[in-house]
Image (cartoon, rainbow, N blue to C red; front, top):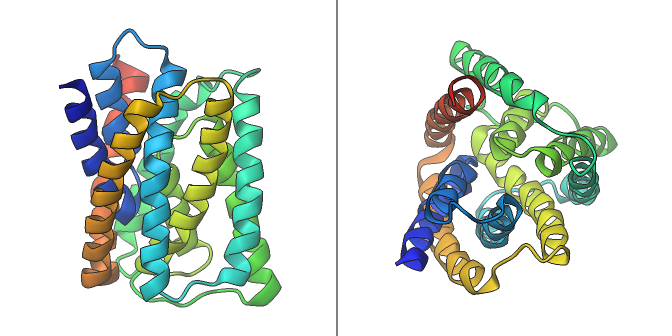
Length: 252
């Protein structure tokens, strides 16, 4: 029964994550509810070990249908991996608790800005070219990669928002690009958790299959309905993140 519950949660998480990120909002609470006495690092390790397959498959699916700026994204993915590793190491010496109360405020700013700019992310008009785009993507990858390793909630949504706002992508191209970087940051986390022995592989493998199924469904939906649909889903997920992180920081 435990495996069935977390696998269903992983399927839904993969579906949401493939469109706009935020799968951890679903899967992590489910893991903590089913295994309340388990060390948090183990549950985070299981979460990352399952979700990396969904983000990886989503990356491949998007790449087949969406033009990806590989010359900018591949260097960004490399520094994102390094940033995530650095963030994971930093959390072993510095507590990220100060971010808990700040995160809902940041997400609220992202939501207000997105709602105020009705045309934001509806048209694909990259602001940079060549080395400038590669540099901008690398800065984004390093910064959010570090955040993912150090703290994590909302990583996919931050990737998408910054690809839209800073690099000028539409929401569909931003989601596709975000999946590649999120996969590399997840890979760094999985390697670290596995090295520390914090992965239940017998659960992670079944959950990975479910996550991939959800990811395929979500990716196809996003590709079918385009940037307007992704924008709407992004707003819903950011609102959910504000409510969840706000409750964790200020109420619980």
